[in-house]
Length: 89
Image: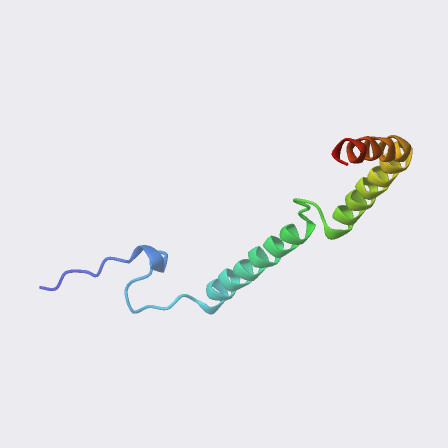
């Protein structure tokens, strides 16, 4: 007496050696492609972190602030350097 073959978990209750109907297999493939497509769309829409343009804007603002501060303080900086040079010589 032979024992009946138990279906495997991956075969969706089909006996070993049987194939899924083409429509079920096709539907599974379409669902997989659809899932991958939606993952790509979500990845494209995700805006984590800063872009290079935003880094450029931040760098420009910092550069302008530094040059502005140096311009406003230039007289005091020159005087301080002159005093230090006078103490050294």
